[in-house]
Length: 381
Image 1 (tube, rainbow, N blue to C red):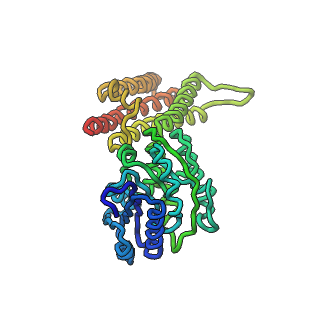
Image 2: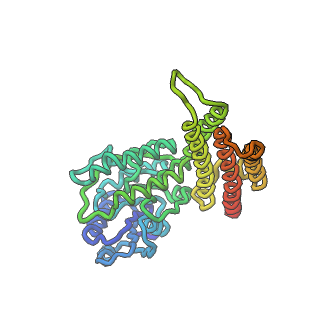
Image 3: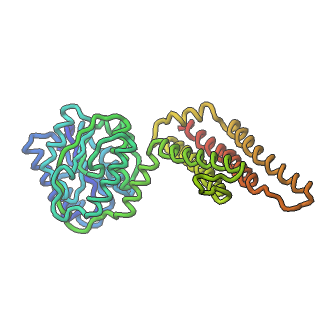
């Protein structure tokens, strides 16, 4: 291949001797037919069959990636690519490389990121399990579109193209199957110029390496970690406020709404909801800070605000203040009990309220410690 190719086609590979040759031959025919100056890179992820031998015999560049994982293989191949434009696709012959020019054309017109869409193209019979076609892929695509204001119809299509500059801007890091989600999310968050191209999808030859549940969970886990702060704050804040208002009102006594009595049992539920909501808020803040610390995110306005105005000392003071409110309510109950010669008292409402406030105060103190540790690491990055 040329030393300064316009296009680098990257094929992650793991034991694909049945199809790797077919893929390379099709790509070479397309490059020749369309007069495209390109190179073919096979990023091998530890094949134990004849995949490497076949690829080398067809004059493809073979790159070895000892670190296991789909993302690791893709990243290695892309980093080694010399082309201005990079096209990546699976080496299992499920994608039709005759459609390569369709992905390259938008890049030449100025687009940064082009992704194939099987759902707007043609999915051959038995090429995709019905659980992937009607449940998994639409669900995960919908979550990506909802959380990141994107408009993808097929976020897990492996036939993609992008510029070298776009790849550097996306700053991709994951090494597993979630790499596919990370790429489309990062493309959206970096406001790359994106285009979709309808493609065909063929039945795989041999056994699929996809593990529906575990790989799906990895995608979902990454989407949630990368999701906007409001994903945690909105439900967390809602639960916290509903619970806090509930226990504050019921502390004064039972309520009757249209003949329906709301009493101690609902106050206990309100206490649980308050603590649950507050825990979700803390989890969200820590998760977002961690995502920034390890480089998945560049910045977050709320985290930047917390880092600037709410330091460890202020968090401890706030938590201690909340704790003392609950403590003094509990102390008053204890004093009244002693003065009453340890007789039975009707203080269950105040006890529920004070215990809830005490726990929120303690959570605030320890969450401040943990968040401050993450923020220290963030400043070092």
